[in-house]
Length: 255
Image 1 (cartoon, rainbow, N blue to C red):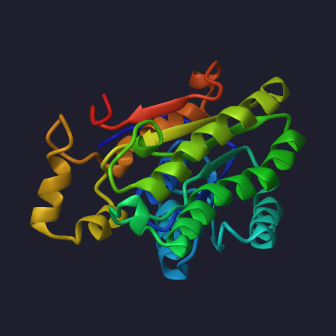
Image 2 (cartoon, helix red, strand yellow):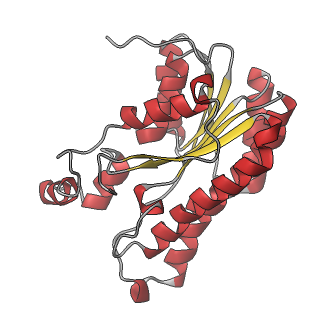
């Protein structure tokens, strides 16, 4: 059985996209290391299940239904977090949507807008409301989910890739804005991770899974827990000198 430190004892974490996949794994990792967690996502039942698992670890959890593109909803979710737990120390802005491979000229304006709105604007909206709360605590840490598609191009991924490149740029600029205020802002760039999103992307078929696994030099998909461990590191004092970094965890896919 894995054992964990108490790096986040007494801390409050806010995790978006926490109802499944990388978000759930990271919310659980924060709880395993001592944090109380706001579990934020679109599906009430999924949020409730993540919260149940956190509570089973002996930590407090607050499930919140929230669309990260809705500024008022994000502000309300953060206010509820502060009311329940007393403040905010850590934010993992992970909510996002995938894009089926589509050549650029065939990407509709609606598809483009949705990819940018959720994957990039959602991160901006969350940080805009989180940073004042972190300043009130005298500092904290934010990690934003980018992607391997944020550090290299992939054919058919124009909308998704543009959004994820944007997340890295947004993270770097914000990191410089607040580095002197003891707020560390970094991004994580997962490769092909075995999640519900990847099931949708592959059509949840053996052939689809085999196709994406063939892109991974290590010969397998990553596990959500492997990304969670990296996010926990970036949010911890162990990464105190990491500012504006885009940490690639992808099994060698983008080398």
